Image (cartoon, rainbow, N blue to C red):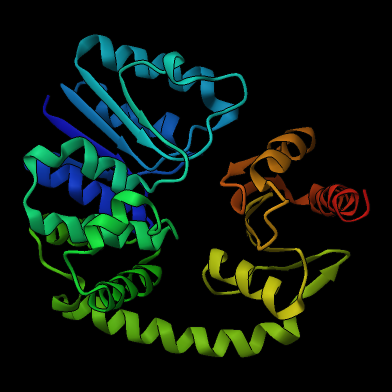
Amino acid sequence: MGIWILTHGDADGICSGAIALAANPEAQVFFTHPYGLLEDLSVAEDTDTVIICDIALSEAHIDGIIERFSKIAEKGSLTYIDHHPLPEGIIEDDIPGRVVHKLGSSASELTYTLFRSKLDFMHTRVAIYGAIGDYLDNTPTVQKLLKSWDKRTLYFETGILIQGIECLKRDYDSKRRIVSNLADNIPPSLDDELVELAIKYTRREEEAVKDLREKAQIEGLIAYIIDYPFSLGKTATYVMGLTKRLVGIAGETRKKMIDMSLRTHDERINLNKLLRMIAPKLGGSGGGHPMAAGARIPKDNFEEFLKELNAHLENLRYP
């Protein structure tokens, strides 16, 4: 019995998880991701209350997820907080429990808004950290919260958080410590270990930027690199920018699959829709935000994936 918070391991997930923990201090925190949510819901099977933050609903697993959600909601309380596009054919009313869903706002902002009455004023900056971390700090709510702070300091703190957790990868015990610190209103700069990791990672990033210019592969309107030892999201952004291509892809091989992050700077491109259309045909899955998304494709189908994606991009470029 008790309360479980299932959240994502990036900055927005950590901050939304921290806000949920501040409002529910007796809760336990578990890190998951869209592809693992269905299986990971088993940790909360005998729980009174489940709060899920910043986890997109995988189209490939949606029927099983809704079934699990129903069982949890029937026995206790389920709250689902997210800002990713819902799977095709799914509306909020189809999701059991209390649903807080809004495109264009960070999960941290949505979690803060939901639990505001249980929070201290100081938790506003945790909501801001998460919003900055997901490039969603220009919303009316976050801009209003920023007026109470010197935003230069908050951007500095967010930088430490983002760079530091990139070093941690799947070190979930350390990430739980950070969630607990943020819930207790301890800013990232007071965590010596996190500061040290952030500096280390920032220096590595400088090396990566120089290195990626030479190592990026070009395929039509796409720049990509596989198994480069750096953040997938950042790597995708840099190969896109350094090569002046419409889309950047960074992938890593996991057994017979390639997990990818994709980025674009072109607002005409909707990566979420493209990946949800292309990936399932190739035995994979994908989705996310319009300009920042992820996919998982069988390794043997990666070249075909590039070909398909390029064809759609060419149609966009030459309608």
